[in-house]
Image (tube, rainbow, N blue to C red; front, top):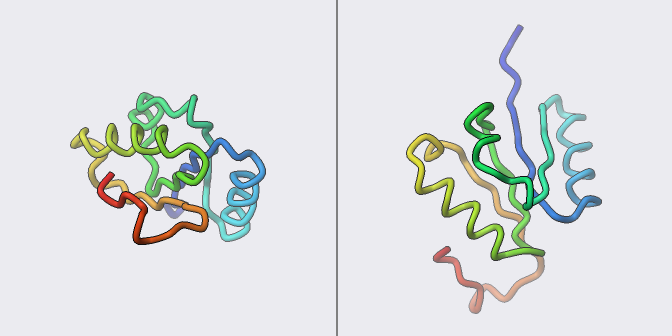
Length: 97
């Protein structure tokens, strides 16, 4: 049986995360959805995702904390992270976080 890509979606927007999960499942990806409150790194130690999709449009502070924690751990440094942002002004968004 071939390895299926495991994708974690972290968002406080249940409608958005459910939509993303539905779309990914239709393409054959395994997903789990986590609220930012649930996004403890211990979950990732037990079953690291192949990709992390983080909605940073609603709760940027939580997103920054999670991303900083992931990048500070060498165990997670190879996990690609896709950040979802709403309509923003590219000149004023803090891209350094």
